Image (tube, rainbow, N blue to C red; front, side, top):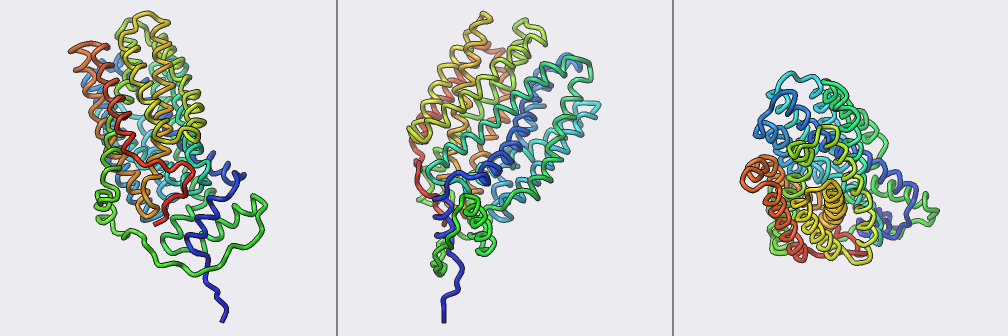
Amino acid sequence: MADTALPSRASLAGRLDELPFTRHHLRLLTGSGVGWALDAMDVGLISFVIAALGQQWALTKTEAGWIASVGFIGMALGAALGGLLADRLGRRQVFALTLLVYGVATGASALVGGIAMLLVLRFLVGLGLGAELPVASTYVSEFAPARIRGRLIVILEAFWALGWTAAALIGFLVIPASESGWRWAFALGAIPAVYALVVRWGMPESPRWLASRGRIAEAERIVTSFELDAGIVAGPAIRKEPPSRAITATTRARVTTLWHPEFRWRTVCLWLIWLCVNFAYYGAFIWIPSILVDAGFDLVRSFGFTLIITLAQLPGYAVAAWLIEVWGRRTTLSVFLVGSAASALFFGTATTEPAIIASGMALSFFNLGAWGALYAVTPEIYPTSLRGTGSGWAAGVGRIASIVAPLAVPALLLAGGAPLLFVIFGACFLTAAVAAWGLIDRRGIALDDR
């Protein structure tokens, strides 16, 4: 009797890795990237809203810090839960759900009349945001051909710069225009709720995830559609499914497996990097508009400086996207983190307008390039059955630092001003640069599909 077994998971993965970059890949990258940009727009907006509400509502530094931090509390929980759900329910489903949650909560924030309700809604926003980011990078990495996988993830991360630039433009043009400007900014942040419908119905599920769940026929249809788009019409080699080495699908087992001897050291290093980079990045960029206002610049001028500084993010991503397939993941990540440390020290001691702008742009360039490399390497160090969980928990642990950072900044400014604050940020970047060498580098190597 003829062998009618469906293609194995291994053959499906190999076919994905051997594909050229197609229109299907472009559509997938763009679709995921738009969601990523909308995330960044929301996170970026809160820094401008805090500066405006600090004046309108006469907020204390502690109250302003809590508006930022409560969102990161939600992001910490969302990242851990989102990764687990992505491994259980699928990448696309969770991606769409998270966009819906934070889009609706952001839109509702435009209607608040006091700080208590704003804090509740910012927590819900964070819950959606935190779950979406690691899921999106996992999703794209599982479609990307091995030889350009890192580059595509950095390009995906570059959409963050587009979103943050959009936030800076809204902050510069909309928020100072009237007392209700911050409400209009939040209303614009509701766009992800509509985009969630596009994601849900217009993008395919990850074939690697489908295959890991035994849904080989569905995975085969999706891979075939990508091959047809590339002009590949030959049928796949037919063979039986090999014995599965997939990691058990229970939630507790997946989390515990992160500390299995095979993964323990990379998990420790990855979590340390996420902690350090989150603390330094969000401590700096959430507070930069307010720090500039406190330095004597008016709201419009402060927001204008922040917009210029933000524009340097895109070149940082572009250079990282090129270097990550030339130098590899660890070297690129480490170099950009060292550059971030030097830039932080420069910014903390800058006193003139040219120095503030130059050092701020350097910080944007190196820090966002480092983020691109970090998001590229994170999904690669775990197998398919653990990838969403590993990425989500790393991001979730990192969010602990992003919770602490906005609350710690006022105390650090009081203790030693901007110089002390940015020395601490620089030390965080250097620590992360060292930890980067504890990760594995899978440049050009097929993803582990266990």
